[in-house]
Length: 307
Image: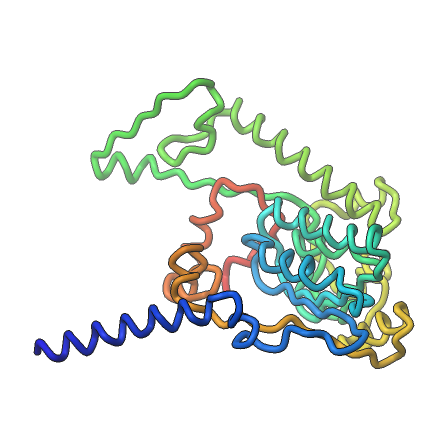
């Protein structure tokens, strides 16, 4: 038995050493795949799933987007949206690439392009979708959890000391007052206005027209094109052809896809990315995600929790 535990200890130590080795800067590029761009190309980046943060997406754009060999950006999106802040930040980064780096940006979606994902997309020059793509859902939502009944049942008394009457708005140990609901609705309306302004500017539509459709509804890609919320119906191949023509690289430009990172246990432990990588998500399902995002301003399509 002693030898068995010694063997287990050896494997753990070996795993830690290998993780450090793979994570170490000089070797990370070698083991994580091709990092050098051989010739003029289009950068292909993906945005999939619920947007919890835009860290990886933004890192990829900043790392490769300003390289001389990259002549344009193609963003493939399949997302129902997510947290407000990251959605806005990704939108701003796409606009920055267009306006400061003078490089064209095309978004393509074959599945879902809704809410925060659509907010991100309107930062591009063109949006290309499949006829059956679900898109739109221009609106804001917040969910709160009220566990007051559960605490009472468990005979748990929770209380708070605060410096202002709104400091514990949305707390899970009591119901929200009417005054607090009005206050939070005002915050949501402000963010909703930011969303509508971004759509109107990005799609060159009148604020009045955008407001008419900014009630949270979704529409198909075909309808979205007819209404002006997207540019054309097409496949990913069509999007590649479009960005190729916009950059002068021809109908079949070289694509450079961001190398996939090989995960290591130390990064997981330090960054807390276990949920984002899908390990906890698969184990605990959508309810854990709902709890994680409770009380946050969200640009997210209704029904997207079920996955």
